[in-house]
Length: 233
Image 1: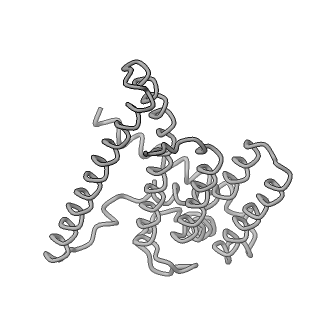
Image 2: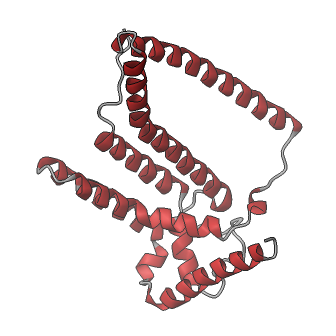
Image 3: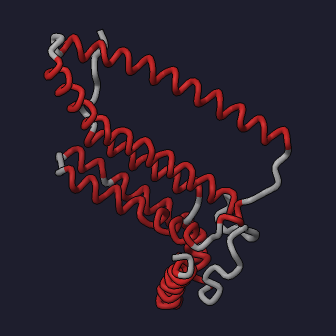
């Protein structure tokens, strides 16, 4: 099994290199030189298209398609950059103060989240008992239905955290400049396709990814999460 892992990674890298080489000469100069600006314009265009979608009550599938198209360039570029960058390129020296303070902050955050979960679970349990009129079967049914409705919310929240995590990784790898001159991205990254490399790195911007990713999650919440609220009495 261990012998197969390097081969799989090598195949994945070769597939990216081959795709980049295929499109290397097809990128317009204005796109390569202003990749980030084009990414913002692209996202803004599709986001503004949601205005007529709302006015004319387009189907939810049209909303999903518009949001996916708006996010696709920067998310796809991010996947390419992060998938071809070893985790060792993110490592940096950490002071003793920062080491212990970060863990203190993590413990405090974990305690606060645990306390909130205990309070909310107790309140929800009481509410379910009241709505189920102390009938175990009815209460169980209400609890399961609530669980099914909450799962998409939790998945969207975790997806948003993943997007922010990716954006943070990008900020450490390539910084916040539109056309970074010094990065932590491997020098071998699309070395034979420099124009494609500039385009991909330009689109894989932490600000663009965080903005479009957050907007996509917001739209998903508006479309699919309407009846997840439980009224606590």
